[in-house]
Length: 64
Ligand SMILES: [Zn+2]
Image 1 (cartoon, rainbow, N blue to C red):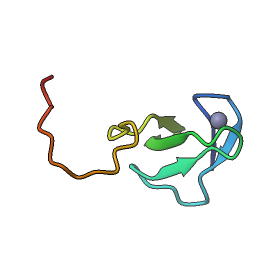
Image 2: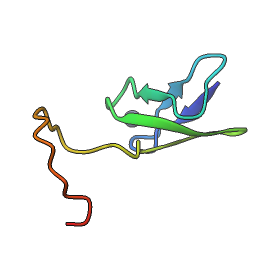
Image 3: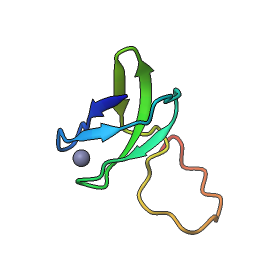
Image 4: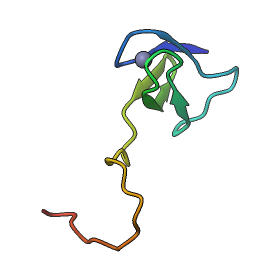
């Protein structure tokens, strides 16, 4: 199954049996895309898409 990248509109191949929550990488723009719907296949930004945070310092900034 394939869907359009929501960033650059390129076709992103999700394989033959994609599952909800699967993370795909757009081959063209390297965007991380999450499978949010299967019929038709739909992609969206992953919910946990934070800027690169390498450190696990345990910031509790949910409500900042
Ligand atoms: Zn893309």
